[in-house]
Image 1 (cartoon, one colour):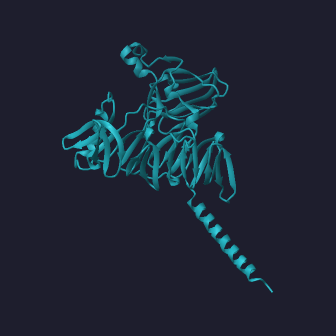
Image 2 (cartoon, rainbow, N blue to C red; image 1 turned 45 degrees about the horizontal axis):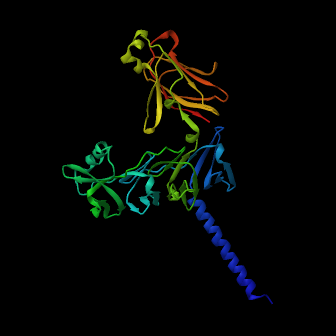
Image 3 (cartoon, rainbow, N blue to C red; image 1 turned 180 degrees about the vertical axis):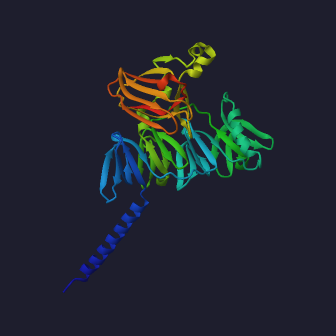
Amino acid sequence: MRSPFATTFRLDATCLAMVILAAARMTAAAAPAVSVELGDDTRQTGTLLAIDRQMIQIAAADGTPRSIPIGTVRKIEGQVAPVGGTVRLTLTDGTALAGDGFAVAGATAALDIAGGRAEIPLARVRQVEFPGGEVAGKEAAARHEWLEAAPESATSDLVVVGKADGFEFVECAITAVSADSVTVVLDEETIPVRRSKVIGLRWLRGESPAAGTVVRVRGGTLRAEMVAWTPAGLVLDGESDELRITLPAATLEGIDYAAGRSTPLATLPPEQLDVDPFFGALGDVAALSAYFAPRAVAAAGRDEKLDLVMRPRTVATWRIPTQARRFRTRLVPTAGAGPASVTIKVDERPVFEQVVSGAGTVPVDVDVAGGRRLVVAIDFGPGGGMAGVVRLVEPVIEQ
């Protein structure tokens, strides 16, 4: 006779299997779709399973798990969502994050963002900008004006109080922030300030160097030395309590590992520079020489990135950092101007030669491994006619 316990066991096992299968399906549905760009210019796509210091784990379309060493990855790109939030938080390394509710308890700052709450060590927070609250009609202007007017010589934290005719700085020690109040210590007295009157906070902090890896999240961009992700959350610099930042898993939009292994050309002074404009004598005029020299400008729509503007005829030589592998950029000639000739050399070896003109961009991706010097020459086009500016979009030397 069949034992009733066996039947019960089979039913329980079946139910358990169904629960596990359903949970797996829910996890797969919740896992973000990503594209992983590798150093050899290939891509792997799938759903993200996990990220740690050594590996990225993804599942291919057929469910097959794949492990990708971090050292081979340039970027991870996921879905980009619209940025919202009325509160803007700036860290000591200059990166920023937008959200809604903001609070401080002890040594931790919390920012409500899409999908949950970000927690950041207070020591990494430089300033917070709030909507104006009670200063109706004036707060938008005041919110930006106080950033320009904030005293650089402050010797304590600053609370920026919005007023009908502008704003006022109060030097004090900020001890807590909630939805209703900002608690400060002023002249050894603890005072709660109504939160709706406050349009900004600035802590007395020194600047900190930006870490190498760029992490794009919903609401802003952060930098970290180490990134970890699981469906439970996104953790930056998790090995140190003093540095650890935690965010909801759903906020991750992309990771640029190559940024930590890249040297922006626009930040490197040329080792040698030869500028000979169309009217050569102009290059000798002190007030105009800088105009014709290579010039770094903010990349369109990306203030944290730099483009390089060069004019014919310019030959600039940069020393290539050790362990460099590739030089990458995109060339954008001036629309409507005459053609310009672009030559790129590694030491004395030409690796790129092309005449550029008209609309559109020309990609450049060349091997600089083992080279000592990178030479970029912008010359007048065929016939020697007038040529316009050539913009090098985010030129970088990658390790």
